[in-house]
Image (tube, rainbow, N blue to C red; front, side):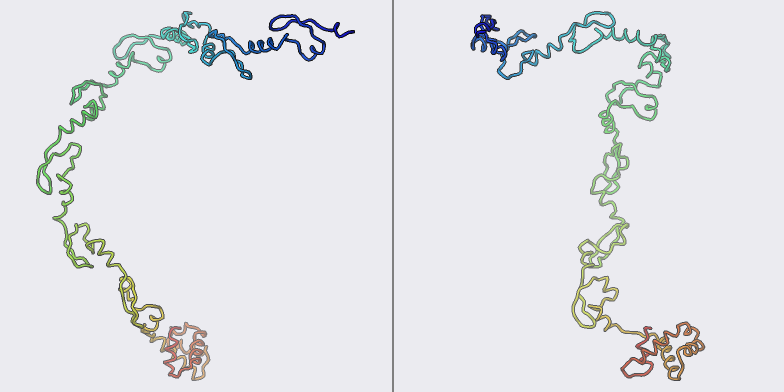
Length: 378
């Protein structure tokens, strides 16, 4: 079969002109347009879209997403554009914006629908004005007794009071008015009333008269200076322990020893002193000097401190050495000491051996009393 007999006739998708295509062109999805100009024109027409909301035609660029509406405003208007809704009570059309989703055309239809939807209303009699009124059954079951808020306030003990400053009338609770409240309509009127109720009193310090405020009935002095000088009559004269100057203090500070913080710091400052043993100068606190601080170190204190031996221990050690020279053993010496003095019998044989060994170990010459003096600390 020849190639000319296999051609297929097809119309251009843009201009409708007839064209002859081969089977290979059909397999490759070719031959939709008769020329390149028809193809370009077709693509340009495909990128145009008419907005269904405003009717404007918009041209889209290649690769740009083609939308239904030309702008967001048209999209929002189209979404809000719905069929006009009707009132759920009277079936009248609602002319407002349908996006509000209103169910009733007016407030009267809303209350009428709510009353019909709820339990039947009952007729009650007001407990204050004795007029009849309609109420919901749930409110009647809950104990409603009054037809309005005014009747409730009037029955619960409220009264009309005129402001004491501006004269404006207002309603206050009877309990509040009985306790002295509710006399003024605002804080400004209350402040003005307090300023009008000031009274003249005499200062306890200088004797001058001044106006005492109503809220400060405990005012006793006309100024801050008189308040600070109120205790001069009851002050006590004292002498500073550091600078020896005289100063006055209130009766509550009678134990004060210094006239100022400076004198107090000087009194507790470190002072010079001379070591009794080596003669060197040092500094220490006055409190340590009052407690006998006369040495610069522990070695000087040990050398300079006078030792006072215990006479009872001296006598005990001398008696132990005397009995040792007689040839007695430590247990025999212990029994002999217990016979002579009962308190010596509680030491033990180890103490006796220690006294004897220390006395034998001394290399310096001396009497038994001098050797026992060395052992007086045992």
